[in-house]
Image (cartoon, rainbow, N blue to C red; front, side):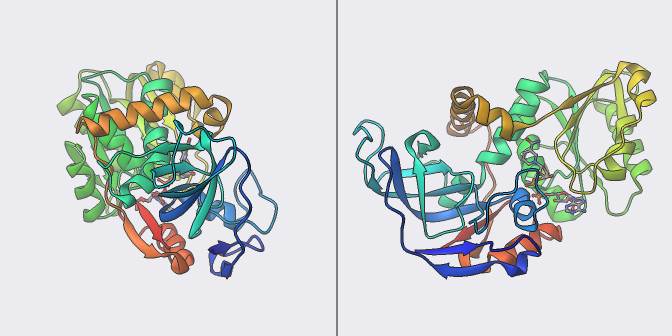
Length: 333
Ligand SMILES: NC(=O)c1ccc[n+]([C@@H]2O[C@H](COP(=O)([O-])OP(=O)(O)OC[C@H]3O[C@@H](n4cnc5c(N)ncnc54)[C@H](OP(=O)(O)O)[C@@H]3O)[C@@H](O)[C@H]2O)c1
């Protein structure tokens, strides 16, 4: 089998592609012939040693894969999964590979409604969006939502899910391609974050709220995977009782001014889907099923990713970090 290995923390171009002998299967494990592996921003953080968790070296990045089951462990029941099933696996690490090993608890048999690329790239993004909007944020139909980084993995999923839940969504993104992708996923308005200052973006979000919402002074919710100065400034685009959903910090950890939180009785809500999912596997599976049900009903549609050959994993991660990709990225062995 072929894997992409991280041997030392550092720039992504130090990743190496190597051949390895497959590991023997544990009793509750399955082997998957990988057809596509999702690439997430967080994979680059792992490789550079910038994530809060540092895996022992060497490790193979990649948390979500889709493929066909080619082998099953001795204690896997026949009604759980069979050789030949097409499954999605949340492997945590080990996905950048031509073969992956997962426990039965980490896999879901995939319906044909999604292509391999879509199936390999929706899970982290949509479960984060669902956890943020429904579990943590308790958003309601008719409310207004501004999504920063709306053409990103987690941002685009939030646009899609929020529109399906009946929210009025404004998409903030840096390129026409990203904004048009967000429009196609249900955003009713867009703001160009590349040509406007953070203060001007804030004013545009307020203008959107004035036209589409009922809450005085700004939007009901802000979904922020970007942070930095943009996040700090857009806190002030929230109206009365408005909620700031803290998703990520690609542009730096925002310093959120407490006086601005006090004003208008605003609220800040932390969202840590990964850690929560690890502590609540049954609830996370139920959430995944909820997302799959919405996909099957046609209410949400994960975007088709941009694909790269497995051997070009470093280029895929560099392009993601350089913000040149709209939507999602997948590696194909
Ligand atoms: N809280 C959670 O549970 C959770 C779960 C998953 C991911 N996350 C976090 O969410 C964030 C986004 O993840 P993702 O996979 O959606 O990322 P992604 O697809 O790579 O998108 C990141 C977006 O951020 C924007 N951006 C602004 N400044 C940037 C900068 N300096 N460098 C890179 N991008 C910048 C870009 O949009 P524009 O070009 O439009 O500005 C880009 O599209 C990450 O911080 C990740 O760790 C959090």
